[in-house]
Image (cartoon, rainbow, N blue to C red; front, top):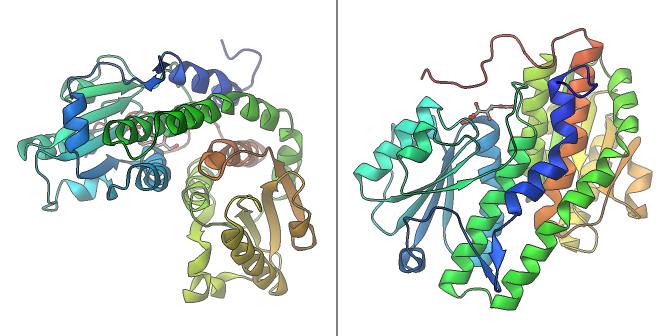
Length: 368
Ligand code: F6R
């Protein structure tokens, strides 16, 4: 049942192209993005004036990624909130607020309470969920299912990528309803999303390098992850995976924050994983990150750089260079996350830990 793999997680990492394709399937027809079971009308979508994404853990990171896309495509303010914080605050919501609750299991207690809190204030709730008929979709106004298939490994992999894809569908549906994107632009964005499963397949064919690197670094005391823009949530997700699977101290930082504190952590030999944006996309972001890497390299860090294939500018700064296929800026998290999943799983395996069942963690967190 593990398809020849030692762990479900490794099988699920390989299933990501299918998880993405299945999540996108059927969501574009006659030139329009379609959401599934809609009890939120087109008019409601048009009236949305604010979006909250509420979620926990990796699902929260998928929301952080979506913020960049939804703000850019829809010109709507988007706040991404940890469900466990949102529910105890007094967030400002009304019937024109769209709350997107992202949950693989659909049973996470804090996320469930967060949507109850939102609905009590008349906000409309759209669940992005991987589990048919779970409590969160049952209590939502609408649901968009991620069709990642059952995820057995406790650490989220294919469900996480599917959540990003589904959140992007929500963003495109909002842009379409609000008219902030022309139909041909929406179609083009959808086509780019549809090309991602193949890009992920290409990443999967190159993971041997990441495995070898993980084995070399299995005794590291700590690993830092840096990114900017959509690379920042990728860094957070990379660090979370390493904590939960390898029980290692790991932190994700926005690279621009380095000088405001974290750079003090850099010491000789400390592995630092850097998620580089495309040099062709946002040139300014690329230049800023190059200068961040040179700073940490000058202080003796071991730089592990994930960069777009053909990006030669980064080579002098990369002790290890992991090449990613070329995709648009907003879609890069869907390819850049994959080597980081492999990295954590392989470190955990080298350390002799159970990759599928990390200590102290449960697949579905139904206690608060
Ligand atoms: C991390 C992980 C957790 C979950 C979180 C939310 O690998 O799996 O952080 O993402 O517990 O779970 P769901 O999505 O079921 O609400």
